[in-house]
Image (cartoon, rainbow, N blue to C red):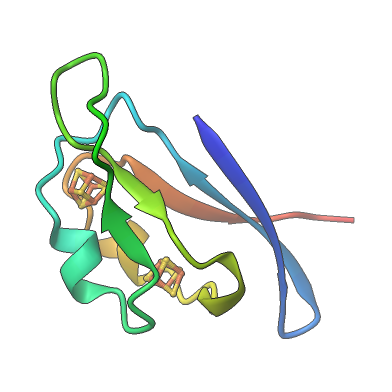
Length: 81
Ligand code: SF4
Ligand code: SF4
């Protein structure tokens, strides 16, 4: 699991990638408006090239990746203070 802590629009978010749930379909990579996702060269334990965040600063926390992932492998949660 990879976790990235982001502050956007005065709110804190965690972008979480469940690498071993990812099937490497690339849907989130294609839909990400900021083009900050990519498929890894490495494989996860299921034998898929999992998604990774390649530019943390470019992520706007828009949640589109979460909405389009069919396998619930990527998502954002708002961190409450
Ligand atoms: S939250 Fe938006 S900008 Fe960030 S990785 Fe997902 S789709 Fe891309
Ligand atoms: S995170 Fe979801 S949409 Fe993105 S490549 Fe993996 S399975 Fe596909």
